[in-house]
Length: 178
Image (cartoon, rainbow, N blue to C red; front, side):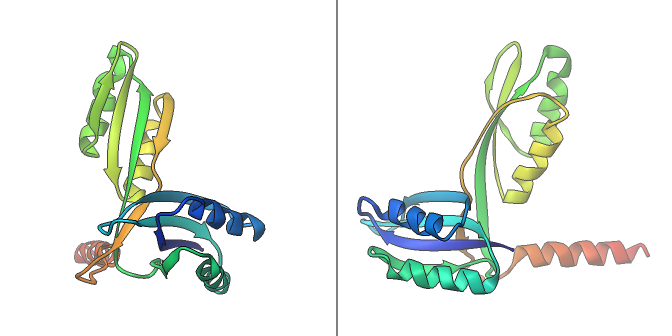
């Protein structure tokens, strides 16, 4: 199962290296990683996605707490969160196919950030599902380059899990017509 960890650390050199070393020694691969400053000076938030069962993740969290400069570790996998990623994607778009790519961009609320005679570069921000979906749709065109950030996340203050709401609304709308 894929887990999302939110780790608060002191801004000190070598913190990320020690975390990466811990994961490497234990044979874990980090699927996604994003690091940035928080609202508090001298504190950064590391958001990472990793695969593992609940027991393994619990052990990993205990090991993280043993590292210096680690302030807080949270497994936010099953907590109502806001998740976002950013992707830049350069797609081959000769004039004959450009309108199709622009229509796809419009549907996904992507921004065109560069254009040439042979390509369009789009900026897409959204939850990981949206990023995956547009990438899959654009595969029908030639994708020239992709650059993605890691997933970032914050716990929802409302504690409302919108993923559960989406599932519930889809279920209810499907049953209206049954």
